[in-house]
Image (tube, rainbow, N blue to C red; front, side, top):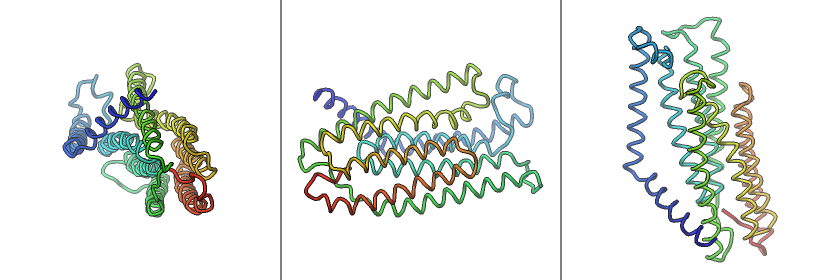
Length: 298
């Protein structure tokens, strides 16, 4: 088991270093820019009827969809960053989840714009879209504001005073993170195969923007619970156990928000953020009361 943890930890560190490398981050930013610009070009070509039928059926006719393409790929990159953050700190990973939720709401605002006529004009038929945009935009802003409070509350204290136990716990989280990366790849292949087989309509990006995140967050819930159970090997203090399970509940709320009706999705996202802040506030004060136990964890 120790050999497995050591090898997985080494592999994780190499992948993380490659992912967080400045050159790689610039490459991702460049790729997103290229996708956006090519999206605008292909959409314009499709509007003019200059694309072959086999390609035209997979290309939308609203220019705002190009923003959705770039935004969805950005979210995919953020999900990978979330997985790497999980090994460093569960609390940081929860904050990353909330960041992703706020970006999903922002993306939905742009998605509603694709329902407007081009050029954009006001009409009675777009009133619902305007309300959806306001709900998503202010919901995202509220989560952003709450995240500031959440981040300021973090103390990032280790689960144990023993260096060996801390290293072992971190190595276990890295192994779980590698499993999540593998799961992420499997989900991507599954969604792409379903789209290619015609089981999912629209473009591949549209398929990724719905089914992909729903499946991943379901997987993330199980990963959170697994981390809770593993953490009990190093600390059985009540605040630690409750805190980790509480973070899993926040993930559940975010997962529900992904499939909830409009307005409710933003409310659930805000609720998850408020819950995370309240959980952290209570935990920070409970840790003092349980000072005789190993009551702090990251």
